Amino acid sequence: MVIKRCPALCDARYLWLLGFMGLIACNQAKSSQKATGFEKKPQEYTLTNARLNEVSGIADSKANPGYLWVQQDSGNPPEIALVKKDGTDGKSIRLPHVINRDWEDIVLSSGPKPATNYLYIAETGDNLLVYADYAIYRLEEPLAAADTVQQVDRIAFFYPDGSHNAEAILVDPATKDIYIITKTEIRSKVFRMKYPYSTTHMNRVEEVATLGFNYAVSAALSPGGNEIVVKTYDAIYQYHRSAGETIVQALHKEPVKLPYVQEPQGEAIVFDNSDSGYFTLSEKALASKVKIYFYKRN
Picture 1 (tube, one colour):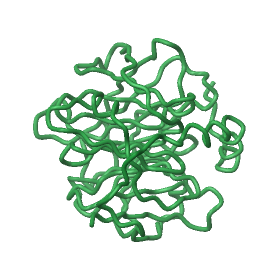
Picture 2 (cartoon, rainbow, N blue to C red):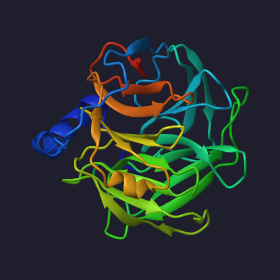
Picture 3 (cartoon, rainbow, N blue to C red):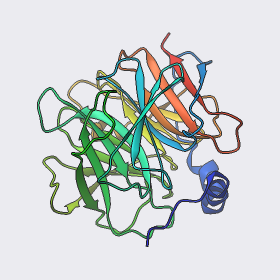
Picture 4 (tube, one colour):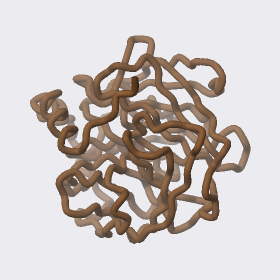
């Protein structure tokens, strides 16, 4: 039986019940540095499509410049949507051969075909820790003219230590390794699925790092690969990645906090493809409207 995710209010109560005190204590990650380089006050754009009220992932489209890909979590159809960066509506594209058990993040990166962009959708949510395995859906980035995508790879995996609730992923464009970041441990764990991974057999992921905080809900890699951001409900943590460093090595560093205006239930972040700043987007929760925020580089 598929256990559907609660509505936003229920999710908020669940969040409180699971670890409000842990969130306060654990998300005070040490930082001796002050973040610079981004505007503290973001540009705001209201999302005009009222159906997009449970967005949990965002990616900047390369095939459709000026648009963002978004995906919603459990209880919603298996589809991805395009929205303009000013919040106005684009269109939805259906993935008819997959299900949305609990989609939690989306990433645009490289894949098996050279010079081809792929979308990776994280089927990794598990609030009640009831699932034995999870999946990443991978598809070639479609053009806005498409109505459906028939070819979607299912990259199934399991954790060696049991169930986890994860809402953030990264994909290294150089190695194609996938990183899954858990949410509700005392400290968020990072697991890696090394490429090449199977699309026909179950993959085993390995734990490679532990972050200094919990409640990771989204993550993103900058276009140049030298910055990694991990978002929680109340903060954005930035990791600097030096030339030649792996993602794992970068995540072992001490992060700095980036500017962030508190959102009702902010679960999505991505860098602009031009590297001019980063976008965040929230579920509606108890707010009257959903907004896209853009934090411009200074």
